[in-house]
Image (cartoon, rainbow over all chains, first blue to last red; front, side):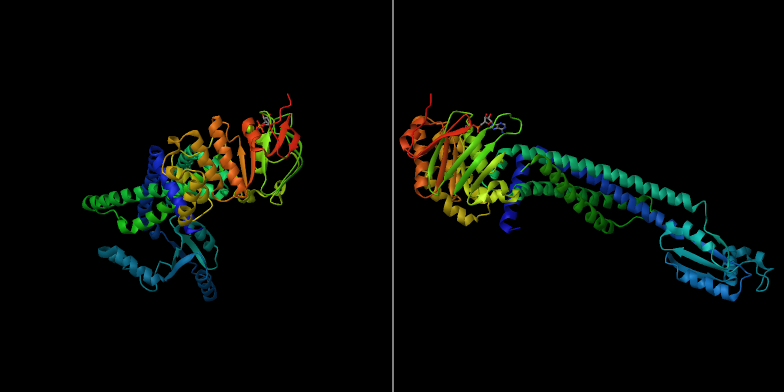
Length: 296
Length: 229
Ligand SMILES: Nc1ncnc2c1ncn2[C@@H]1O[C@H](COP(=O)(O)OP(=O)(O)O)[C@@H](O)[C@H]1O
Ligand SMILES: [Mg+2]
């Protein structure tokens, strides 16, 4: 696109935004509110994710070895675990080490284990296994339970599944909610652009008579949607930044044990999501109108 | 320059033809009046030349191109070579005379420098040099039509079409506008004027094509307004 045309389209778009006055303000407002809700939801879900991540990371599989299996089988099991693509960390815990840990956990009451020693150890050799994605644990646990030389597998079943189900549900509801809001914003912008097209129908007719290409006629409307979407995205970013900062300060002063993502780090994510989204909403909205109401 | 051959036009929901078996050849530099009662098909003929609508049958060629074969994306480039003057002027009241004329240039990407050079020249040609910064609403009907003519010719099209250009003007002003259009023709532009204006047609003694009952009934060099009744 020629720079001169670009400036012309931008100028036309800005003029139109000013001329539409209240309608432009209304569309910017709706985009802002939509993205504000969406942004707040993001801030919330990032923090919930941070919080649940802590819990999730504590979830692991403990794989107890079958004592009766021979050295060959044990090596085979080790190889299979090492090459499993979903696993993040595989740590061998011998029964001696397990005994040491247990003693430490018991602390003062370590004497309870006094009767046991290297020959008389009731514990078993085991692997502590972590998956790359915590949600994979139940499936992976079932899979490796069938590996050779495995006695049995423990991963806190019955506790892990509901936790993952809950976080999954929260995510899906969030996505559905955001999609609904986005569609609303698109239609409101489409409506504003439709009004613009209507206001400028005479100009468009003349443009066609003097030989403007279809795209030349469309571009100013696309730019108008883009600008409305962009301004509509800037506002919630600013609002979220200041209110989240205030919220973090307040939380740290009052309920300091909750871990919160620092504002600077979260803002980067918010800006990366909200600004392009505003622009996309604006362009989508205007494209719908341009296609439906601008038969050029 | 323009070749129309066995042209028929029937609008979608109509049972009758708006134009029936039209044959017409117009050479470069000609001045031609299309006359006939209202509903005869004059405007339809101009619309077909601008590729606003397609013929039902027959062919219509301009600049060597058959308009029935023209691709949609080629239409704007056809129109850049055809100026159009309207009965109701169709000026934009949110901008001044200068910007109304500059409009034709801006939308084809002419530079501002070129626009500042060309628009005053054209305004001078149509006699509106000192009205450049007025709003069209502040002008008389004749002046508004001059702006419309200026907008049509500023990008130097080879053909100028005018649909009842004097339909909204008093007789004296009509004559001025027709004279202006004749001046443009003398400078080399092919001109086609659809009109009811008997006085003008009789006065200018140009080629006259008569449409009646949607057919071409007469085509005379240096003709007069045909009145069969
Ligand atoms: N867009 C249209 N749809 C249907 N019929 C039309 C349309 N435009 C013109 N007509 C009809 O075609 C005929 C010719 O119209 P027109 O070319 O406007 O005549 P003129 O300009 O000579 O008055 C008229 O009967 C008119 O009603
Ligand atoms: Mg007509």
